[in-house]
Image (cartoon, rainbow, N blue to C red; front, side):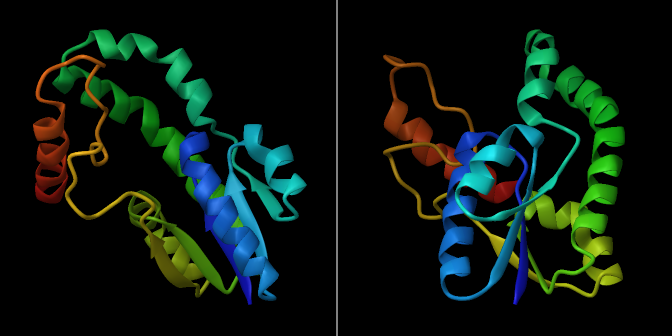
Length: 167
């Protein structure tokens, strides 16, 4: 089976997907990872195929670090304006990269972006969730951790799971 794994994010996002891809390839599947250009050599060194995205989350984050100084609503508005053309381009790149693919694996964010691609390329979809689903005090869900030494870390960590579930 030809499998494409679409992953957009930082090292913490890409590493588990590549390990999964290696395991799938070891069982006889043909695997390619669709990711930002900064990860190409690392992915290929692990024996997986690679298809590039022109957008790089690390570059975007550095170039737009000033957004963190804005209020949360302004952050969302500005990010939406900046991200719209990036998402369109990313969708076109994933569409092309998956033309000869049987299965597309990605996280929930990726699936929301790729519904039309799944239909056009007649792909089976598998949603991955590398983040823990069970509530724990040890670390937060898909939210930033509190600074070290901040009180009530365990309570905050548990709260993040409830917050994400309601989103």
